[in-house]
Amino acid sequence: MSHRTPERLNHSATAVEPEKSGIVVEDLVFSYPNQDPVLQEISLTLKPGEQIALLGKTGTGKSTLMENLVGLKQPKSGKIWIQGISLEPKNLFEVRRKIGFAFQEPNDQLFMPTILEDVIFGPCNYGVSTEEAKEQAYQLLADFGLADVSDRPVHELSGGQKRLAALAAILALNPSILILDEPTNGLDPWWRRHLAEILPELPVEVLLIASHDLNWVRRVTQRAMVLQQGKIHVDMPTEQLLQDPSALESCGLPLDY
Image 1 (spheres, rainbow, N blue to C red):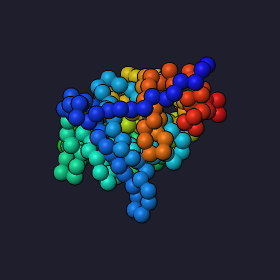
Image 2: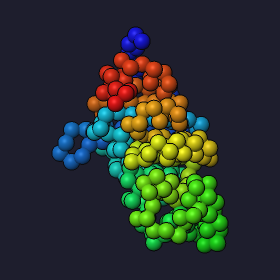
Image 3: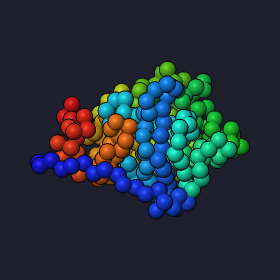
């Protein structure tokens, strides 16, 4: 296939209407202390109904960008709006009710004695009755094929079961935006397929997935953005990008490895 020059973003922040968009980012810059910026002039809009892959070589800033989007890291400059709400310290509580964020490592999110207790922890913390939280939790665990292990501690679960349990705990809070960081890490083919079948059915407004699993993201996303040298250098339909080996190679993402 002939090489197609990757499309560069040319978003104008003044042209978007944050209150009508899932996520809007304007000129985001982030750097760690005494280091060059990891993210430079990131501008993007993630619209309701979109499932987006965030791609890039290791170390390009995918996790850092996601952590900025949920307020775990503070940008040096720029603005973020989540469903029209400016992401700043005074609004963090409200914004985080809208976003479900899954870390690369599910053990970072599962900390209660049993999986059931992990799933009900969030709703109970926000004032939902234990009875109501358990009813929802049992349904989520059943949907994810985890009903039989609901009373087990985390260390007794497989890697795939841990990831689905962490996802159930996130969804118990009914987020409208779901952000997943490398959700297929350590999963065997059966669990990757199971997760791919679940994600499109979730009742979320925006789904953003960072992954190196290119063939898997082809099944669960329609739009792909590629981070390179701190900027989004590619923004195009996922299938179009994955059908262009030259474009992938130029981004350091050879498809068959």
